[in-house]
Every structure is written in C-alpha cells, then in structure tokens.
Image (cartoon, rainbow, N blue to C red; front, side, top):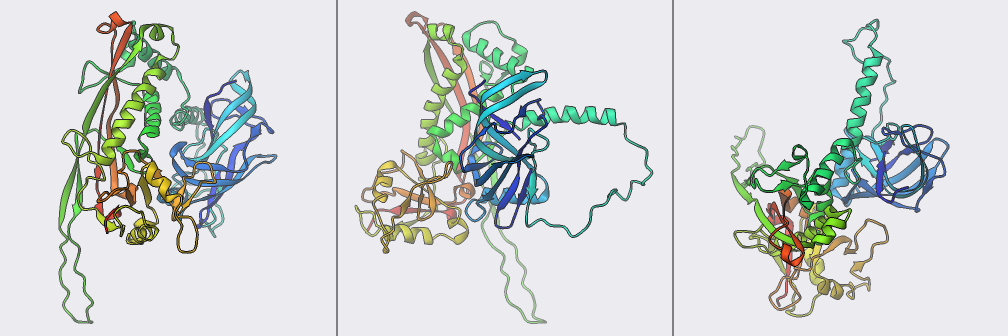
Length: 500
C-alpha cells in the first residue's frame, strides 16, 4: 500500500467539448504490470479534467464516472467556451496528437505479483487527457465532431502491395515493448515512476546534501555556477509545484523554459492598410512594421539553515530543503511578478507600461458598475479568457457587492479544481496587490496566458555548506534559480484606478 498519487492511463470529443472514453480497461495490465480489479474505485460523483496531470491546467470536468464490465468509463466536458487550453486540447484530440486517458489515484489496497501489482482498492483523485496513457487500452473513444463517412480498409498504404512479406513480429514487438516503457515513464509528470536511473540520481542528490560520498556521474553541475549542482528532474518538478502555492501568478500566466539569458520577441507595431475597391480600381500596397521586445532572465538566490541532527536523522532531507526554499523563492517571485521594477528582478505586470485604466468613479469606495465597465472595456476575445487579480482585502470587499439585479458579483467554486469567480471570470488572490486607496490600482483584469510570460532558465541549483554554521549545530544550503518575466501584450490587460 502507498499514499502517493499515482497516474494510470480511451477518448472522444464534440464541438461543444463533450468527451467520452475508457479511463481504465479491466482484465489487462498496464505498461508497468499493474492490474486494477473491478470494484476497486472509490470515486466522487464528479472529478476535475486535467491535461497531462498538471494541476495548473484544469480544462474541464468529468460528471459521469461508472464501472462497467469492460472498465472505468467516463463522460465529461471540456470548458471550450471559457478556457483557451481546453480548445487547444480539443484540436489536439481531433488531429490525433492526443488520444489517451490517465488516472491519478492513491492506492489503498494492493498485492504484489511477478510483474507488478493487483490493486483492489484506490481513491480516484483526477482523470487527465494525455498523449501516451500508462495503460495502452485507455483511449478516447468518442469525439463527436470527428466523423468519417469512409469505410475502413485493410491496407491503407497504396505503396504497400497486398502480398508484401510479413514483418518480423518478434523483433517488432520487442521494439514496441521498449517504446512503451519509455513512453510510460515520460507520461507521468505528476507522479513519475521511479526507475533505476531516477533512483540513483535521487540517492546521489540526498548524499550530496548530507555531505557524504555520492556518485558524481549521476548529478549535473550547473554550467553557469560550477560549485552548484542541479536538482534532479523529479525534485525540480516538485519544487515548481510547491512554488505555485506561493506564487499564484504562475497558475494563470504563460510559463515556458529557455536556455538563453535573454528572450527577444517580435512585436507588430503597424497593420496593413486594406481598402474596399471596385472591379478595376488600383490596389494599394501594405507593409506592416515590426519591432521587438526583450525579456531578460534574472537570478534569485537565498540560503536556508537546517539542524545537523535533522540532516543526519531525517530520511527525507531533500523534501525539507525543497519545501523551505519553495516558500522563500515563491514569496519573492510572487512580489516581483506583481510589482517588479528594478534592474535585477523580473518586470511586474502592475509596473509595465501601456496598460489602460478604468476609473472607479470614487477614490475610496469600490463600485460594482466600475468593475462591469472595466470588464466590458476589454475586447471579447480577451475578456472571455480573462482572470481577475487582487489581494484578499479587496476580494473581501467585492464578496459583499451586488449588481443592479441583486446578484452577487462574486460566486464560490462548487467544483473541485475550479476557481471562484467574479462576473463569471476566475479570480486569483495575490497578496502583493495594492489595497483600496486613493489613486491606487487594486484590481487588474486580463488574459494572462496571452499577455504575461514567465521563462524558467534554471529551476533549482543547490550548494550545501556543512562547515561555516557548524558551531551552532546548523548546516546551510545555498540555492539559486534563474527566471525572467514580463508583459508581452499590454492591450490584453486593464486596471481599476481608485479615482473620481
């Protein structure tokens, strides 16, 4: 038995986002040898629909979940009207790039057998749409908008004659088996399967933190800071997930990775000048103009002290270090993403130039009409994908506000994985946003996926220091990471200014 979240992985979707599939087929093992028995699933009536087990990518909801003789069948809906990522996933399913389902669960009862486990009880936490399911039979079965009038053919390759020689099935199956193992490993970002290489790297990293001998070949030295060692991929992934708890802007912004110290982004500064013409009227030429914007990668560093006894006795020193650093880095990063303005920190969206403002109409009292005006001053494309950002004090004020029909502007979340909303759009609480006060801008609304971009250059470098603090019974861990951020589309944001 284990209390860790595991992921196991068939799928169809309509224009409206209705999607059906088999999340787990009964009677056959998955790629790592696990079998789940019928009746094992302890599940709620509804579950969040994620993409690739990423808790920051909630793309829909599963509202029909049932065990049948063939397996765990599900029916749900992608939030294609409200979530851009949901529309992208629908397109990937239609194109055949994504066709699998995968379940995230906690095992409650299992027995080991030769090649894996037979799981008799589990608590189901989420079901994801994935590119490669852990179970080869877990596939999308219905995408109602994807239909075909053509009957299937036995040989759909016109270059392959019907009497072609047979493939060496033994060698072919061996190759497929190897690919299956690699795909299964790559498909578990939220709870990666620990294979021998991963375990070796993790043990080496723990030995490195404790100052003991370790396999130096298993770890990677940071090329821009040779004394530091890069945290293993599993540790870095957990670090980022912990970071989101303290840096909520990551959950709504466009987060990417980069190998460069500077990112140059093309920016159009002019449009074409098309005009209506008659049949023989001369046409005018168009030459749009372009510029470029720059996002520089910054560095943040700190150190954390842990007692030598805990370092020696704890069986999970890596997690202790990771959590302590995530809280510190997350708080500093969250502040920079909101208000960053100096040369050494990322640019915050509240300090970026070019973002329009809507007047509240009063310097001290928040107005419901102003919020509605602000929201509808945005183009519909961005308004329908927008999110509100404000601090808890401002949010508390809005929770008491109603529109002209007596309806509360704020609405709670009734579905796991779904945020609370204001005027139908999600709201994110950021403690570093300004309070309600004269000439302040306590609220911003916008399409953060389109307008605010975060680039991770180095996720986590660590350097243990077991000597300088030893006289006080402590070990010091120096850590650094490199990240850049900035507004790439000021036109998709709008602020509320407390002015008359």
